Image (cartoon, rainbow, N blue to C red; front, side, top):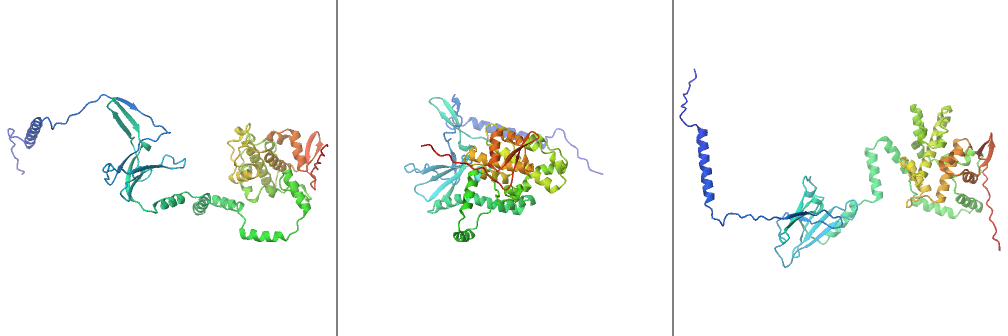
Length: 440
């Protein structure tokens, strides 16, 4: 049996006693505060001021707010104050990066702080402003501070080689283009996919530079070789004609303008877009390709040999990229080709052959060379019997000018069933340009 304790309702509980003591302490504290003298009581001055918010001006630097983490007082020696310098990053992308350096004149210690490292790099969920009260005009000016950061100035020992170390560290941080490319190649070889590693190897092969030792040996051997004047004249004629690589002694039209000299070995795999669509059974949209290519896509269905079909698909794709590249440098056709993506390996080649990196327009010679490449590929696509009307629409040129281009390549024209066809007889015979004598 448990013992029951009898509770007296008239006896005060513990909680009631505690509340009573608390009320007595609060009453005593209020009485003590009322007895304080008037001098010790804090007086608050009220000012009616007009608030003026000054926006940030990009042409002027905002006030910089900083503090010394070591407790250094810059106002202690008023006769000889420390020098203060503010540095800004020269790079356009990092123009908002600032550094404050305070140098006391009587010490080897300097205080430096930035708005992008250390404490300033932490997440910030508020916005700082500096308030300046002008009592005469009764105006409170609120100004944004520089970079919306408070600089923490850390002490650093100043040495003679400090500037040299900073200069070397900044030079190391800015890698050259070759170093960046080398590091990207290392990352690709370590972590890249098989396709990216293969593309990287192809790019290295295409951009391989000449070995200086082998070039020196080649120069020594070239001194012993006799110069063939006839070959030199034909070479100068080739440069003047501004045409693709060709062979004057070729026995067939295919050898006259070799396809492997126009489309290099590492470029074929980047031209398989049409062939892959055919393999997947998807319908090739004729709107995305030039008129010449669109009117000849049906020929691919009749070709049984896969190698021949793949080669023709790559030729069509190469023609498409060439025409789109030409349109991207034209004022009236830029909008139709600005979203077209040319593989980087081909864009690099086109820029080297047909464009100037400093200019946004193609010169007349560059346009003529690009047109010659397109016409040679159309000859390959049509079995060296091509109707120039379709490609004239794509190049936005007149049939008369295009005929001159074909004749400059060594082509002849003939009519078959009312259609004018351009053919390539072999061996190639270029038209002879006669120089007119000046009249005295």
